[in-house]
Length: 161
Image 1 (cartoon, rainbow, N blue to C red):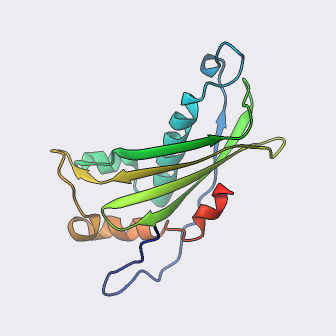
Image 2: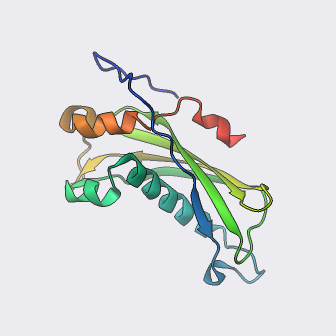
């Protein structure tokens, strides 16, 4: 579903190299079996996505201050191995599709000490005005649109393997 940059002058600038997000699993996130409950992976994806936006120089807080919201349209997570209390999970988040109205993210979560794959995931988001109407960052906020293109990674879905 890769959407190409359709602007008259496509973005040709430097891509941002994003550092992976690290998350230490907390005791309260465990379930009755002593492993991290599956619902926490979705929270960790959000944390990694917010960290990614901070790194690109446009925080989620700044976006909300501009009365732009970005709700989740879909989320998918495939669990590969268990995470236990106090494990450190490294989350690589990549934007794999973006067209100014929607974006799709992929996530790869691995154990920091062993490199073992813990989960792969995807999420899809849109951009809305504070009143809930769809907006195009390309048209309404071209300076933000350009920032998002610095993150776009057409090879990003490779992390799902």
